[in-house]
Structure formats: structure tokens, C-alpha cells
Image (tube, rainbow, N blue to C red; front, side, top):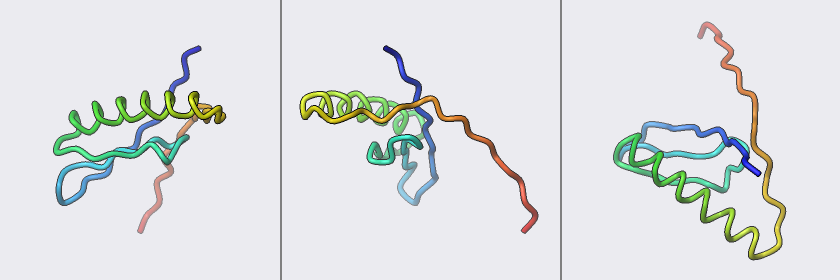
Length: 72
């Protein structure tokens, strides 16, 4: 079964931090967005493997996100 997860990338002093919205424990960093994306995909595969091995329930994906503008 294929699940789709939503990634969030935040610019940091050393590059980018990537984290999954639906599974916040899956988090990594990279020098570029592309590197961070690759590392996040790898981290996701590793977390799925660990959760399966430990018999833990894998968090569902397929979140629907909406950006809401506000004047500040």
C-alpha cells in the first residue's frame, strides 16, 4: 500500500531542515533542499522499516494542507 506524506522544509543557518507533517519524528537536515529531500525520503524508509520491525503502527499520510494568509 502506498501512503503519501507531506514534507516541510525550513531554511536554517547550515542549510535546510526537513520534517514530515504527519510523522514529526521523521526529521533530517541537508545543505540544499535537494539534499534534504533525499535524506528525508531515506529517513522515511528507515522509520517504516523500524516501526515494522518493532510492531508499531505506522502513522497514516495523505494530509490536506492549506496556507492561510494573515496581515502582520
